Each structure stands twice: as structure tokens, then as C-alpha cells.
Image 1 (tube, rainbow, N blue to C red):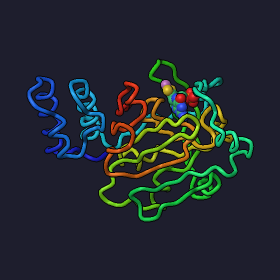
Image 2: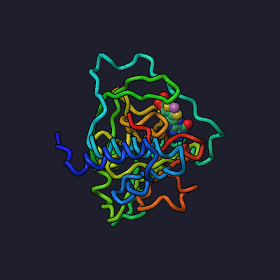
Image 3: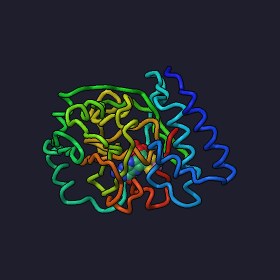
Image 4: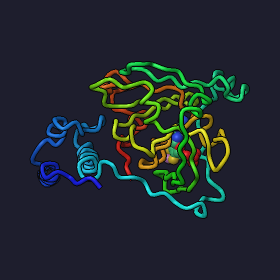
Length: 253
Ligand SMILES: Nc1nc2c(c(=O)[nH]1)N[C@H]1C(S)=C(S)[C@@H](COP(=O)(O)O)O[C@H]1N2
Ligand SMILES: [Mo]
């Protein structure tokens, strides 16, 4: 494990104490260090800002728990997806997603469109981890996919990139993660589950799997990724469609 620098510890401690006492604007200090969540605004943003900053300073590379095969849930629960199925999506479904692409562009050296078979050929990683919904239920499954870091190596992000933003084609939901999460070895572009293909109900053909974050950040039917240094101009600039609905951007577990 990497040791935490004394300076980071001091900063974290000072921010926590001062923040709790309401003495200083934590988000202002945090922005110097690049650890402010995009939805850090106003009074309610304070808690999230502190949680995010503390997690980044104290355990920036921690991993989600992985389980043995025996712990895989017999009946995983596929949450419903709301709204009408767009025509484009139905067409892809009827073609067995053979022509489904994931575009990756924005602040990158080489923008690329990958098919699911391109991704499968690039790299494979699997993990047995839990999906935890904010509503209280969870299940454990084996997730198989291409590490996000492998895709990033291909497109080569350009400095000063800060966020990876991703969109679902099925319902237009979108979300974003910082580069630490984007490069995290457990962050997968998932195309397989429990030894087989990733079923439609669980986000097939392609799902972002982020076991260190609550379920709602694990978007299904992902077809577009943009790398950016700022969330300005993307939706309301708060980092996620879920944030616009009242959820918090940082949902670390
Ligand atoms: N595109 C899309 N992705 C989504 C959702 C959604 O409604 N649309 N729901 C999210 C929520 S709230 C949770 S808890 C998980 C549920 O994953 P599951 O369907 O595999 O149980 O998916 C997330 N991904
Ligand atoms: Mo959820």
C-alpha cells in the first residue's frame, strides 16, 4: 500500500475539522488540489466534497471487495429501465448488437469508435463483485470486460483531462468519473456476465462497471465516452444526469 504523505494527511484533517465547524469554504481549498466533485455547490455539497476529498487523499487506490465463485447470486436482479426504447436501440437489438459502437473522443490524441468485438480483442478482465443499489438491495455477479485503462491507453488522453463522461443510448442517462476511477483496474467496459454474454437486462451489450461506486453510476447500454477537463456545458455542469435528479456525484462504497 502506498503511504499517505504527511502533507495530504494534514490537509485532509484540517479540511475536515474546519469544514465540520463551517469555518472555511472547503470547495475552494479542494479546487487547488483538484479534488472537488462537480456537484460541489452550496450547503449540501459540503458533505460530498469532504467525503470525496477524504477518499482521494487517504485511500486513492483502494479496491472494491471481490468474492469467491460460491458467493455469486443465484437470482441477480435486473432493475427496470424506464422510458420508450429508442428506434436506434431497437435496430441494434435486432442486429444482435453487431454494429453497436462505443465512441471515445474529446481530449484524446486518437478518437476511436470500438465495436464490442474490438473491445473483446483488446483485453479481458473479470471480477466477482457486488452491485449495490442506493435503494438497499444488492447482488453479486461475475463481470467480464475490457478494462477502461486499456481503452484509455489506445486513445491517449491529453493533459489536463480530469473527467471521463459516459452516456447510455437506451435512456440517455449519463454520468462521469474522475481519472483515478477511470484508470482503476476494477473499472470495466463490461460485455460478459457469469461466464456468458452480458444479458440485455443487465446492460448488454456494454455496461460501465464501477464496483467502488453505487449502482446508479454503473450505466447500462453505454455507447459514448468523452474525456474532458471540465463539466461545463455538459448538461447542467454537475457531472451526471442523476445529480440533476438529486443524487450525489460521489457514491463511493
Ligand atoms: N442506462 C441505465 N443504466 C442504469 C440504470 C438505468 O435506469 N438506466 N439504473 C441504474 C441503477 S439505479 C442501478 S441500482 C443499477 C442496477 O443494475 P442491475 O439492473 O444490474 O440490477 O443500474 C444502473 N444503471
Ligand atoms: Mo439504483
